Image (cartoon, rainbow, N blue to C red; front, side, top):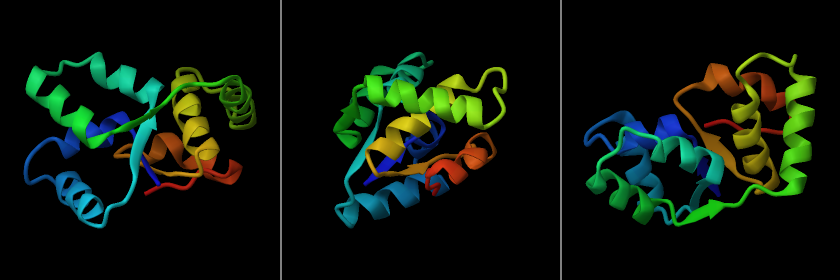
Length: 123
């Protein structure tokens, strides 16, 4: 299972981008793709046009709800990684991937690397 971060999904929708190429490989390999509803909300915040939205909805069939367990893990990630301002959403996205036992595909690795010690796998 691979979860897509907002940054990866946005770039993957650009035909010919490295992220598009990678996404096509995963689709051909029948790799299950998903994302957190938190990341999905970021994506919907746009700007995004109807074509991109329709395509993204076809690609990301599994959008995981944010649960109480994920909230608790998010807090542990946030507190354990230094309580850095503006990073709670990243902790929420990471917690969802960890709970789903999914690797996280992101274009912003530096935002998530500090969470690898808590069990997050990055692509």
